Length: 390
Image 1 (tube, one colour):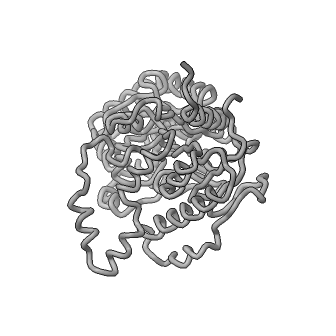
Image 2: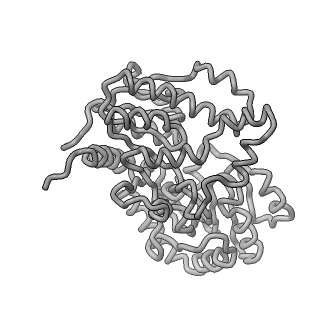
Image 3: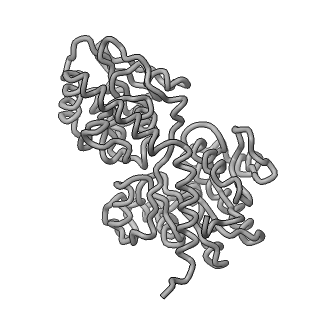
Protein backbone atom coordinates (compact mmCIF):
# COMPACT_ATOMS: atom_id res chain seq x y z
CA UNK A 1 0.00 0.00 0.00
CA UNK A 2 1.33 3.44 -0.96
CA UNK A 3 2.10 5.67 2.04
CA UNK A 4 1.90 2.73 4.38
CA UNK A 5 3.73 3.36 7.70
CA UNK A 6 6.40 0.98 8.92
CA UNK A 7 6.70 1.86 12.61
CA UNK A 8 3.41 2.86 14.29
CA UNK A 9 2.96 3.77 17.96
CA UNK A 10 -0.56 2.90 19.13
CA UNK A 11 -1.69 4.04 22.59
CA UNK A 12 -4.94 3.24 24.39
CA UNK A 13 -6.14 3.32 27.98
CA UNK A 14 -8.23 0.25 27.18
CA UNK A 15 -7.04 -3.34 27.36
CA UNK A 16 -6.34 -5.43 24.29
CA UNK A 17 -9.09 -8.00 23.93
CA UNK A 18 -12.54 -8.12 25.45
CA UNK A 19 -15.67 -6.12 24.66
CA UNK A 20 -16.35 -2.53 23.70
CA UNK A 21 -13.23 -0.39 23.26
CA UNK A 22 -11.08 -3.35 24.36
CA UNK A 23 -12.33 -5.23 21.28
CA UNK A 24 -11.66 -2.21 19.05
CA UNK A 25 -8.07 -2.03 20.33
CA UNK A 26 -7.62 -5.75 19.71
CA UNK A 27 -8.92 -5.63 16.15
CA UNK A 28 -6.88 -2.52 15.39
CA UNK A 29 -3.65 -4.23 16.44
CA UNK A 30 -4.55 -7.29 14.39
CA UNK A 31 -4.97 -5.04 11.38
CA UNK A 32 -1.67 -3.17 11.81
CA UNK A 33 0.48 -6.09 12.94
CA UNK A 34 2.88 -5.72 10.00
CA UNK A 35 3.53 -2.03 10.69
CA UNK A 36 3.23 -1.93 14.49
CA UNK A 37 6.30 -0.64 16.28
CA UNK A 38 4.90 -0.47 19.81
CA UNK A 39 1.52 -0.51 21.49
CA UNK A 40 0.79 0.86 24.96
CA UNK A 41 -2.25 -0.42 26.87
CA UNK A 42 -3.35 -1.28 30.39
CA UNK A 43 -3.40 -5.02 29.75
CA UNK A 44 -3.59 -7.79 27.16
CA UNK A 45 -6.40 -10.35 27.25
CA UNK A 46 -6.29 -11.66 23.68
CA UNK A 47 -3.77 -14.31 22.58
CA UNK A 48 -1.62 -14.29 19.49
CA UNK A 49 0.21 -10.97 19.80
CA UNK A 50 3.94 -10.37 19.83
CA UNK A 51 4.19 -9.33 23.47
CA UNK A 52 7.60 -7.75 22.92
CA UNK A 53 5.78 -5.02 20.99
CA UNK A 54 3.25 -4.28 23.74
CA UNK A 55 3.97 -2.13 26.78
CA UNK A 56 1.42 -2.79 29.51
CA UNK A 57 0.74 -0.34 32.32
CA UNK A 58 -0.94 -2.78 34.65
CA UNK A 59 1.60 -2.03 37.38
CA UNK A 60 1.95 1.69 36.70
CA UNK A 61 1.97 3.87 39.87
CA UNK A 62 -1.32 5.45 38.75
CA UNK A 63 -2.92 2.23 40.01
CA UNK A 64 -2.33 3.58 43.52
CA UNK A 65 -5.16 6.02 42.82
CA UNK A 66 -7.65 3.23 42.15
CA UNK A 67 -9.49 3.96 45.38
CA UNK A 68 -10.58 7.32 43.97
CA UNK A 69 -14.00 7.77 42.46
CA UNK A 70 -14.11 6.56 38.82
CA UNK A 71 -14.75 10.16 37.78
CA UNK A 72 -11.16 10.95 38.78
CA UNK A 73 -9.39 7.61 38.45
CA UNK A 74 -10.13 6.99 34.78
CA UNK A 75 -8.86 10.42 33.63
CA UNK A 76 -5.76 9.89 35.82
CA UNK A 77 -5.10 6.62 33.95
CA UNK A 78 -5.48 8.39 30.62
CA UNK A 79 -3.05 11.12 31.58
CA UNK A 80 -0.54 8.53 32.79
CA UNK A 81 -0.80 6.73 29.45
CA UNK A 82 -0.28 10.02 27.61
CA UNK A 83 2.90 10.79 29.56
CA UNK A 84 4.34 7.35 28.77
CA UNK A 85 3.40 7.64 25.08
CA UNK A 86 4.86 11.14 24.72
CA UNK A 87 8.20 9.95 26.10
CA UNK A 88 8.21 6.97 23.75
CA UNK A 89 7.55 9.17 20.73
CA UNK A 90 10.50 11.37 21.61
CA UNK A 91 12.85 8.40 22.13
CA UNK A 92 11.63 6.18 19.29
CA UNK A 93 11.76 6.30 15.54
CA UNK A 94 8.02 6.13 14.84
CA UNK A 95 6.52 7.27 11.57
CA UNK A 96 2.89 7.50 12.78
CA UNK A 97 1.13 8.00 16.12
CA UNK A 98 -2.39 6.63 16.71
CA UNK A 99 -4.06 7.77 19.92
CA UNK A 100 -7.48 8.31 21.47
CA UNK A 101 -9.35 11.48 22.32
CA UNK A 102 -8.96 12.53 25.94
CA UNK A 103 -5.65 10.74 26.42
CA UNK A 104 -3.21 12.08 23.83
CA UNK A 105 -2.62 15.83 24.14
CA UNK A 106 1.04 15.52 25.26
CA UNK A 107 1.74 12.84 22.67
CA UNK A 108 0.22 14.92 19.89
CA UNK A 109 2.30 17.92 20.89
CA UNK A 110 5.49 15.86 20.60
CA UNK A 111 4.37 14.25 17.33
CA UNK A 112 3.67 17.71 15.90
CA UNK A 113 7.07 18.99 17.06
CA UNK A 114 8.88 16.05 15.43
CA UNK A 115 6.83 16.11 12.22
CA UNK A 116 5.27 12.67 12.81
CA UNK A 117 1.81 12.12 11.23
CA UNK A 118 -0.89 11.56 13.85
CA UNK A 119 -4.35 10.07 14.09
CA UNK A 120 -6.86 10.75 16.85
CA UNK A 121 -9.73 8.33 17.38
CA UNK A 122 -12.96 9.98 18.59
CA UNK A 123 -15.27 7.51 20.38
CA UNK A 124 -18.27 9.86 20.36
CA UNK A 125 -19.00 13.39 19.05
CA UNK A 126 -17.12 16.69 19.17
CA UNK A 127 -16.89 17.82 22.79
CA UNK A 128 -19.35 20.67 22.03
CA UNK A 129 -21.87 18.25 20.45
CA UNK A 130 -22.85 20.74 17.77
CA UNK A 131 -23.41 23.62 20.19
CA UNK A 132 -21.77 27.03 20.53
CA UNK A 133 -19.82 27.05 23.83
CA UNK A 134 -17.94 30.03 25.37
CA UNK A 135 -14.17 29.82 25.99
CA UNK A 136 -14.89 29.12 29.66
CA UNK A 137 -18.23 28.06 31.11
CA UNK A 138 -19.51 28.97 34.56
CA UNK A 139 -19.04 25.36 35.61
CA UNK A 140 -15.38 25.38 34.50
CA UNK A 141 -14.70 28.62 36.36
CA UNK A 142 -16.31 27.17 39.50
CA UNK A 143 -14.13 24.06 39.22
CA UNK A 144 -10.99 26.21 39.04
CA UNK A 145 -12.04 28.09 42.17
CA UNK A 146 -13.20 25.06 44.14
CA UNK A 147 -11.68 24.60 47.59
CA UNK A 148 -8.74 22.27 48.12
CA UNK A 149 -8.64 19.22 47.86
CA UNK A 150 -11.50 19.30 45.31
CA UNK A 151 -9.50 21.70 43.15
CA UNK A 152 -6.59 19.23 43.08
CA UNK A 153 -8.90 16.39 42.12
CA UNK A 154 -10.41 18.48 39.33
CA UNK A 155 -6.94 18.76 37.79
CA UNK A 156 -7.09 15.01 37.14
CA UNK A 157 -10.06 15.51 34.83
CA UNK A 158 -9.68 15.86 31.05
CA UNK A 159 -10.49 19.51 30.42
CA UNK A 160 -12.49 20.69 27.47
CA UNK A 161 -9.55 22.86 26.44
CA UNK A 162 -7.28 19.80 26.30
CA UNK A 163 -9.79 17.99 24.07
CA UNK A 164 -10.05 20.96 21.73
CA UNK A 165 -6.26 21.17 21.53
CA UNK A 166 -6.09 17.47 20.61
CA UNK A 167 -8.52 18.04 17.72
CA UNK A 168 -6.31 20.81 16.34
CA UNK A 169 -3.00 18.97 16.79
CA UNK A 170 -3.98 15.68 15.12
CA UNK A 171 -3.55 15.37 11.36
CA UNK A 172 -6.60 13.14 10.96
CA UNK A 173 -9.66 12.63 13.16
CA UNK A 174 -11.44 9.27 13.05
CA UNK A 175 -15.18 9.88 13.43
CA UNK A 176 -17.64 7.02 13.78
CA UNK A 177 -20.74 8.24 11.96
CA UNK A 178 -22.30 10.90 9.79
CA UNK A 179 -23.82 12.57 12.86
CA UNK A 180 -20.45 12.62 14.66
CA UNK A 181 -18.86 14.14 11.56
CA UNK A 182 -21.52 16.86 11.49
CA UNK A 183 -20.58 18.01 14.99
CA UNK A 184 -16.98 18.55 13.83
CA UNK A 185 -18.05 20.26 10.63
CA UNK A 186 -20.23 22.59 12.72
CA UNK A 187 -17.12 23.44 14.75
CA UNK A 188 -15.30 24.44 11.56
CA UNK A 189 -13.20 21.38 10.76
CA UNK A 190 -12.55 20.74 7.05
CA UNK A 191 -13.95 17.55 5.60
CA UNK A 192 -10.50 16.27 4.58
CA UNK A 193 -9.43 16.17 8.24
CA UNK A 194 -12.31 13.81 9.10
CA UNK A 195 -12.18 10.10 8.27
CA UNK A 196 -15.38 8.03 8.64
CA UNK A 197 -14.41 5.02 10.73
CA UNK A 198 -17.28 2.55 11.11
CA UNK A 199 -16.66 -0.25 13.59
CA UNK A 200 -17.05 -3.99 13.06
CA UNK A 201 -18.85 -7.06 14.38
CA UNK A 202 -18.13 -10.78 14.55
CA UNK A 203 -20.66 -12.12 12.05
CA UNK A 204 -19.93 -15.71 13.08
CA UNK A 205 -20.78 -15.09 16.73
CA UNK A 206 -23.74 -12.85 15.89
CA UNK A 207 -26.04 -14.54 13.38
CA UNK A 208 -29.81 -15.00 12.93
CA UNK A 209 -31.72 -17.59 14.92
CA UNK A 210 -35.24 -18.96 15.00
CA UNK A 211 -37.72 -16.18 15.67
CA UNK A 212 -39.96 -16.50 18.75
CA UNK A 213 -43.65 -17.28 18.32
CA UNK A 214 -44.63 -14.15 20.22
CA UNK A 215 -43.38 -10.67 19.36
CA UNK A 216 -40.27 -9.84 21.40
CA UNK A 217 -38.52 -6.44 21.34
CA UNK A 218 -34.96 -6.30 22.67
CA UNK A 219 -32.79 -3.48 24.01
CA UNK A 220 -29.09 -4.05 24.76
CA UNK A 221 -26.92 -1.47 26.50
CA UNK A 222 -26.59 0.49 29.71
CA UNK A 223 -30.06 1.24 31.09
CA UNK A 224 -29.70 5.03 31.21
CA UNK A 225 -31.71 8.02 30.03
CA UNK A 226 -29.21 9.00 27.33
CA UNK A 227 -30.03 5.77 25.54
CA UNK A 228 -33.77 6.46 25.74
CA UNK A 229 -34.65 3.55 28.02
CA UNK A 230 -37.19 5.57 30.03
CA UNK A 231 -38.96 6.58 26.80
CA UNK A 232 -38.98 2.99 25.58
CA UNK A 233 -40.63 1.87 28.81
CA UNK A 234 -43.16 4.68 28.52
CA UNK A 235 -44.00 3.68 24.94
CA UNK A 236 -44.28 -0.01 25.82
CA UNK A 237 -46.72 0.65 28.67
CA UNK A 238 -48.89 2.77 26.35
CA UNK A 239 -49.05 0.14 23.60
CA UNK A 240 -50.20 -2.81 25.74
CA UNK A 241 -49.47 -5.22 22.88
CA UNK A 242 -50.92 -8.70 23.32
CA UNK A 243 -48.58 -11.70 23.01
CA UNK A 244 -45.54 -9.42 23.20
CA UNK A 245 -42.51 -8.98 25.44
CA UNK A 246 -39.83 -6.34 25.97
CA UNK A 247 -36.40 -7.54 27.10
CA UNK A 248 -33.87 -5.07 28.52
CA UNK A 249 -30.31 -6.42 28.72
CA UNK A 250 -27.79 -4.25 30.52
CA UNK A 251 -26.79 -2.72 33.83
CA UNK A 252 -29.67 -0.86 35.48
CA UNK A 253 -28.52 2.61 36.55
CA UNK A 254 -30.18 4.45 39.46
CA UNK A 255 -31.62 7.14 37.18
CA UNK A 256 -33.83 4.54 35.49
CA UNK A 257 -35.05 2.80 38.65
CA UNK A 258 -38.05 5.15 39.13
CA UNK A 259 -39.29 4.16 35.66
CA UNK A 260 -39.22 0.46 36.54
CA UNK A 261 -41.97 0.77 39.16
CA UNK A 262 -45.25 -0.98 38.33
CA UNK A 263 -44.05 -2.38 35.02
CA UNK A 264 -46.27 -4.88 33.23
CA UNK A 265 -45.24 -8.51 33.37
CA UNK A 266 -44.31 -8.36 29.69
CA UNK A 267 -41.15 -6.37 30.57
CA UNK A 268 -38.09 -8.38 31.58
CA UNK A 269 -35.01 -6.61 33.00
CA UNK A 270 -32.24 -9.15 32.41
CA UNK A 271 -29.15 -7.31 33.66
CA UNK A 272 -25.75 -7.72 32.04
CA UNK A 273 -25.49 -10.89 29.95
CA UNK A 274 -22.22 -12.46 28.78
CA UNK A 275 -24.08 -14.46 26.10
CA UNK A 276 -25.87 -11.52 24.57
CA UNK A 277 -25.75 -13.12 21.09
CA UNK A 278 -28.34 -15.65 22.31
CA UNK A 279 -30.71 -12.83 23.27
CA UNK A 280 -30.56 -11.37 19.76
CA UNK A 281 -31.35 -14.79 18.29
CA UNK A 282 -34.40 -15.12 20.52
CA UNK A 283 -35.88 -11.72 19.58
CA UNK A 284 -38.13 -10.31 16.87
CA UNK A 285 -36.86 -6.71 16.64
CA UNK A 286 -34.23 -4.50 18.23
CA UNK A 287 -34.94 -1.08 19.75
CA UNK A 288 -32.22 1.47 20.52
CA UNK A 289 -33.61 5.04 20.82
CA UNK A 290 -30.41 6.77 21.96
CA UNK A 291 -29.92 10.53 21.80
CA UNK A 292 -26.11 10.44 21.53
CA UNK A 293 -23.63 7.73 20.51
CA UNK A 294 -20.44 7.46 18.57
CA UNK A 295 -21.60 4.38 16.72
CA UNK A 296 -23.51 2.01 18.98
CA UNK A 297 -21.97 -1.47 19.15
CA UNK A 298 -25.39 -3.01 19.73
CA UNK A 299 -26.67 -1.80 16.34
CA UNK A 300 -23.90 -3.76 14.60
CA UNK A 301 -24.71 -6.86 16.65
CA UNK A 302 -28.45 -6.59 15.96
CA UNK A 303 -27.83 -6.17 12.23
CA UNK A 304 -25.56 -9.22 12.12
CA UNK A 305 -28.23 -11.14 14.05
CA UNK A 306 -30.79 -10.38 11.35
CA UNK A 307 -33.06 -8.10 13.39
CA UNK A 308 -35.07 -5.18 12.08
CA UNK A 309 -34.12 -2.14 14.15
CA UNK A 310 -35.83 0.90 15.58
CA UNK A 311 -33.14 3.46 16.29
CA UNK A 312 -32.04 7.07 15.87
CA UNK A 313 -29.67 8.76 13.47
CA UNK A 314 -27.71 9.75 16.58
CA UNK A 315 -26.91 6.05 17.19
CA UNK A 316 -24.75 5.64 14.08
CA UNK A 317 -24.92 4.64 10.43
CA UNK A 318 -25.67 0.92 10.58
CA UNK A 319 -29.40 1.35 9.98
CA UNK A 320 -30.70 2.80 6.72
CA UNK A 321 -34.28 4.00 7.15
CA UNK A 322 -36.72 1.73 5.35
CA UNK A 323 -34.04 -0.79 4.37
CA UNK A 324 -33.00 -2.57 7.55
CA UNK A 325 -34.94 -0.60 10.12
CA UNK A 326 -36.89 2.49 11.07
CA UNK A 327 -35.11 5.72 11.99
CA UNK A 328 -36.93 7.82 14.58
CA UNK A 329 -36.09 11.17 16.19
CA UNK A 330 -34.50 11.02 19.65
CA UNK A 331 -36.46 11.83 22.81
CA UNK A 332 -39.81 10.91 21.23
CA UNK A 333 -41.81 8.17 22.94
CA UNK A 334 -44.63 8.64 20.41
CA UNK A 335 -42.27 7.79 17.55
CA UNK A 336 -41.15 4.67 19.44
CA UNK A 337 -44.82 3.66 19.80
CA UNK A 338 -45.52 4.08 16.08
CA UNK A 339 -42.41 2.19 14.98
CA UNK A 340 -43.01 -0.71 17.39
CA UNK A 341 -46.64 -0.99 16.31
CA UNK A 342 -45.60 -0.92 12.64
CA UNK A 343 -43.22 -3.86 13.03
CA UNK A 344 -45.62 -5.70 15.34
CA UNK A 345 -48.42 -5.48 12.77
CA UNK A 346 -46.16 -6.26 9.78
CA UNK A 347 -43.95 -9.24 10.66
CA UNK A 348 -43.12 -9.84 7.00
CA UNK A 349 -41.65 -6.34 6.77
CA UNK A 350 -39.67 -6.93 9.95
CA UNK A 351 -38.30 -10.14 8.48
CA UNK A 352 -37.26 -8.42 5.23
CA UNK A 353 -35.55 -5.67 7.17
CA UNK A 354 -33.75 -8.21 9.31
CA UNK A 355 -32.44 -10.01 6.24
CA UNK A 356 -31.28 -6.71 4.76
CA UNK A 357 -29.53 -5.87 8.04
CA UNK A 358 -27.64 -9.17 8.03
CA UNK A 359 -26.57 -8.61 4.42
CA UNK A 360 -25.44 -5.08 5.24
CA UNK A 361 -23.38 -6.27 8.23
CA UNK A 362 -21.67 -8.99 6.21
CA UNK A 363 -20.99 -6.64 3.29
CA UNK A 364 -19.76 -3.57 5.22
CA UNK A 365 -19.24 -4.10 8.92
CA UNK A 366 -17.12 -7.17 9.61
CA UNK A 367 -13.87 -6.77 11.54
CA UNK A 368 -12.05 -7.43 8.25
CA UNK A 369 -13.70 -4.31 6.85
CA UNK A 370 -12.73 -2.40 9.99
CA UNK A 371 -9.07 -3.41 9.77
CA UNK A 372 -8.95 -2.36 6.13
CA UNK A 373 -10.37 1.04 7.08
CA UNK A 374 -7.66 1.49 9.72
CA UNK A 375 -4.92 1.07 7.12
CA UNK A 376 -6.75 3.42 4.74
CA UNK A 377 -6.84 6.02 7.52
CA UNK A 378 -3.09 5.65 8.03
CA UNK A 379 -2.55 6.17 4.33
CA UNK A 380 -4.72 9.29 4.40
CA UNK A 381 -2.90 10.75 7.43
CA UNK A 382 0.52 10.29 5.84
CA UNK A 383 -0.70 11.76 2.55
CA UNK A 384 -1.85 14.91 4.38
CA UNK A 385 1.75 15.54 5.49
CA UNK A 386 3.18 15.18 1.99
CA UNK A 387 3.55 18.23 -0.28
CA UNK A 388 0.84 18.48 -2.90
CA UNK A 389 1.90 18.02 -6.51
CA UNK A 390 1.27 20.95 -8.79
